[in-house]
Image (cartoon, rainbow, N blue to C red; front, side, top):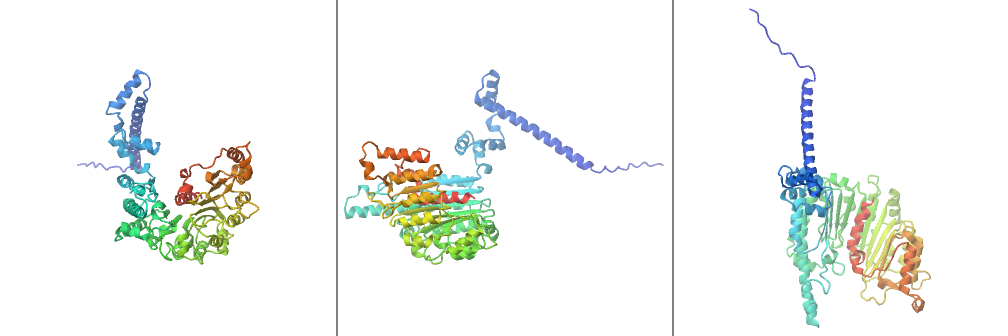
Length: 560
């Protein structure tokens, strides 16, 4: 008996690989056909929406709008998201109202990599904020929130103001009580909105940029927030403590955070907040901004020891009294990358409670400039005395921008002259503000001087591109000289109408209208149409100096 055994032949090498490659190729061809079909459906839908002439196009339009196979709702989500990506946010929101499927695609993470919100501190904003943060808070990569409260402290604004109260002591008491009530309402609403934002992003590990700003008109009264109002709005301190804990939880959960900015946020940041950041995140942080002049006593939000962890920091914004000589030494170490942007807030409240003895001297600034030749400094001085400014303005500071804002003290001509001499190679922005109540007599910087300091500033500082003045006397002939000296290089020249004054000789000339001549000569000097600022409320640099400083600081830090 013969047995014939069938021995299976081994597969040639690579046969299984070739079979798998064939299957992958067939799958790709099938997927390509499906994509072509989807694009054809979309093309028919668009033709129907455009209403092209011709019976054939109208028939296809009716099929696209009414047929289930080619209807708008049948488009795949990926395709709708791709279409939405080409639309601006308002059009995207309007398109999402067409059907539930499109509305679900509206909050696809790829469409909202960044979210910038400006909120009024009002109870009506809370449900909208909760909805938006519930949809986007868990995946957004860049979040910027600004709380823009109405001016509840103005005498004629807001509900329940004291305008109808009787005159005399009784009327003042009633008005003060109503003012206190409005303050408490605003603070309670403010705390609720902050809680809503922080709760929604507590588990977001994709967050790369996080910025918070609190409205200064709500948070301070004559330079500082009264603790009496805060204790009444949050009697047991539970909400403030909960906010601080949530903020620290966000920092501890972050895995990609590179930008952290918090300004005037009612003690949300504490001296122990930054310790929640892991060393890996602190080592990769590129921007750090901690501005809060409400910190009591001599406590600071960051110490020099804590700053040693931020070796990759390229931009820093702090209260000037917190920026010590030891910090300057840390930033000049070889372990740290060169610092390129430094923003400093000099506030009268901080100067009163903290000492200027620990600030960097001229040698420290020279070392910082040697470490980074591209270092630029932005300073905002709020109600600072001239003798303190003389201590602060060291010759070696690479000062690019300076913003003066005052209610009580005034900037002297000597300070302006010093700035024009020391920082003529760097200065590009100069803002001079004085919020005086009596507009009949503005301080004149040119008193007892042969030359006007503002004219010398325009002459010496060849890089000057922005000049804004309010609350100081600016003579018309000096304004014309500034425009002629800087010409088209001076991109922005903002001077309020009440700050401009004319010589008696100009007013006595009956043949020439002094106002018309001023506008004509300044426009000719700048090479562009110019007019004085008639409505001060239209410019945030005059009405909201702290908000303007915070926004400009953000742009200043991003421009690296």
